[in-house]
Length: 351
Picture 1 (cartoon, one colour):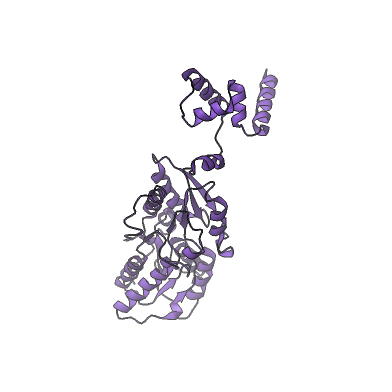
Picture 2 (spheres, rainbow, N blue to C red):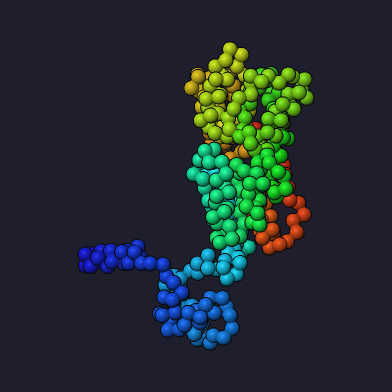
């Protein structure tokens, strides 16, 4: 008996694996109607008897037929599909995608995610290639997350919203967090703890977020009457490997900082790793703070003090804005800046 069952399962698996895509002609043949009749049923048009409609829908369910998005876009000039383009699926983008998924519930739209596979730094302009390939056929619009290109480089006519925008032209609708105020509050907190030498691991220099976080760092020191020491500002690029090496160099100097702010949490966690590799204890020897409040920040050892930006809300608001643009609705606020707040944990201590 077991051999019979196994053989049946094998034949079924082979049939599923190698069966070609079900077409509208397959549905018509099995239902015993014309292709035109199936098309009318799919598009809810008049002129098909209720019994025939029921039979066609049963065959569609049985065969698992799905209309081609390309064909649908050619007929209706709309696919009801939104693309989210990310450089990589990492903690920030993963949280943002949760917010994007929240926004499409009940909207009638579907969500597709495209990733550069972490090679964005090597492929500047990768978003342009994806948009050129997909816009007008598979996508009605797209959300670009930390884009590598400016609006002038992008395909015209396709609704686009940028999250954590590039430093180029500002006419593109954007959603971002208040990076300036967030970084300033983190440095002010470290100053209140008694730290005088505070280092900064910078972010991606082509993004507004990185520039504003460095500006907030400088502003907090200046407001406190402290000179900004360029030697304490080292590159990170939102890349943990770069941040780790920069932190090791910073912490190996004779006049090393007593506290470091990472431009994002991933960089800050890399700083903790670098400090530990040099025999330094966090927060006894070095206080570390980050920016983002990704889930990993609360799980690292020690848990990371960080500036929380509402990442999930950023994803939700970006998709809501994009849907409004696709529908031709007025968008009163095209540049959203969401508030940040500092979250104190065990990676920082008084000097």
